[in-house]
Length: 533
Ligand code: HXC
Image (cartoon, rainbow, N blue to C red):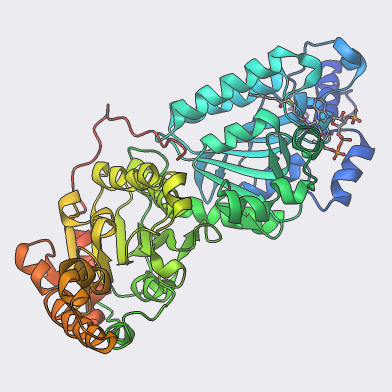
């Protein structure tokens, strides 16, 4: 008789789980818990997700590979010895978003207020190093009271290690910071060194010194929200580029942003095909050349017309609204847009607009994203505040950013392009690759009103009556306009490559970008760090 072998599971049945396995499971379970239940409840009461929930919300299902779950502080000062500190207050690891690898860390406010001690910092540094070596984006979810006071200078050194890595990764891999709670003290400087900062309205704050210190130092009374809330940083300081209504909305925006970006500086963003034909005409833009040239309009309308499926993912939409920046797709490929917005300050360049655009251009250049520049600019915004605030220094950043950018650059002059601002907005001799102009473009050293006062001041002053002066002005303006308020003189010198039909903008831009697709790329050793501007 043949003896039947017992099935594997039958053999296991009734056997006790080995103590080593049981112990491992218990240790892991405990470490996964997060802070004590009261702290978790307090977190939820503020409408916030826990650090672990956030990681799972953001990453593709089942893609998270956690690291250092069991890391623990070695500090036993100020009662830390007796505290259970799971994962030292931060969850770190690798995962996927939309099928793409990313590195992630998520600070746990329920554990010692998400404060940063030495092990906490080491965990963050480890994933940043992995991100750098494997050339994948790094995303930080920040919810922290700053340097862990109990760990003294070790905490500060931990921050220094992170800042050092932020700079090393700058321009090499995309770095995204998502502020989901307080972000205090030096903790704000790591996000500020990254490429994009997200905040959630009503629940995130960023400040170097809190309201109490402000009160003691300057006597000013200010709330957390006014000092460093999402509205403040998205509209006034320009520290954050994206403001979300909720954490869920914030993660949706992070995913959308990532979809426009490459994994690293050596790659291009993935092409995401769509059915919108690149030869689609844009007849609505013919109206551009019919309206009063001084009439304000939102440049978004032009961007929507040009973009694939009329979609524009705007960056920093609440700050320096006189310039508009963001991402579109053309034929499925990512394109960065920089456009003067005549609806605000007539589209003039000021300090904030210069900084906003320059940093964005430098990001695009670092990550192989072509630049489409839409020009309608009457000049630099005048005034003592601007001059004393350093418009010369800040405006120069825009010249620098465009001139150094070696990615494909396509420029369309929609309407006004005067003086230094014309030069700055990716003009031909700053090395625009294709420079187009609409027939209603006015490209000149300065606007007609200012120009005739300088050119003909003696003639105008010699007028016997105000009526005569007004008549003279009108005639001289008309003469000036006839000569300069068109793109043809500029086209005759080669500063504009082609005067195009408004209905052909999309097609012309898409074709130019296609020709430029193989334009030289940054060499291996070229330095393209994205310094905060
Ligand atoms: C250690 C901290 C902490 C910190 C908060 N906690 N911040 N522990 N170090 N920096 C602890 C609290 O003691 C508390 O512990 C728990 O986290 C939750 O804090 P609460 O104050 O109860 O929460 P809340 O009322 O929501 O206030 C949050 C807060 C506040 C606004 C962030 O905690 C706060 O102001 N913290 C200090 C912020 C700050 O000044 N940081 C700068 C540090 S110096 P229990 O045990 O009660 O749960 C710095 C310099 C770095 O960062 C420079 C780098 C270059």
